[in-house]
Length: 340
Image (tube, rainbow, N blue to C red):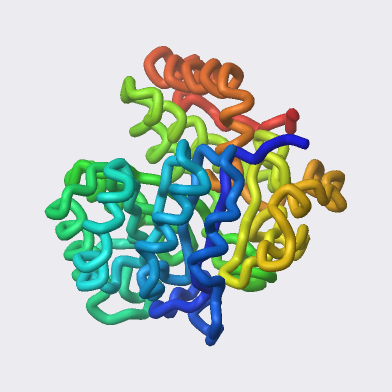
């Protein structure tokens, strides 16, 4: 049995936001998974994406992180928060950093000022996010970043938010609105940008910024965003998905799914061991042909497996920017052939 290297863990499916591209805020879920169960996560994990809902709604968040660290001692933690509770960041993040000084802290920003607040539908939310980032820096968090979700409403906010990340000296990542019957909700793909030319232009802009830099991490981001163009245009992933083997999703009630987009449940950590759950390969064929998304969290494990191919393509993308061909002055658009 293949040991997973990545996991997306929703420690709560309750939320204090009202995002238009996500329905999680409509949940009222009691009795979520007690902290002790996170000790059952597989030790093979190299990346754990801690998400929600809003993770800082969990009063036992520090204990959860401590138990995750005990279970997966070599994992890199990345927490995604809406940033609307700076007081909870100030209370809990210092204790989390004592457990893992390299803990990565990400906030969601989908526009500047009122543009963000209109999408997340929390008045004054943008200012709270900047305060959360300020506090995170102040208490010693070094791995900080901004995550951007692209919809029709904020296409022209993309370069502004990417510039904000540069100005603040933090990482930048992005995705597009995506459907999920078990997570975001249905009909969210309808929010994606309607003007294909405008979308392609903005995504190429974003990719070029990363690809002109020398950092391997930046090149990988540029490679990913360029393939996002192709995904939105063709509906095809650049790499085959390895959900349920390379990575998995666990919700706040302990149910383990192949990923957070499909209702392909493999088991529940409350009543089963992770070994038993991960041995369930009922959905393997469906996963191999799935093109439901192109997200960093669902591509990371396969990118790691195909690192030489990805790196070569990223360097080709970089070269195409510096030495453009006459018929491809904007380094073209890759239409991927799915490859395992």
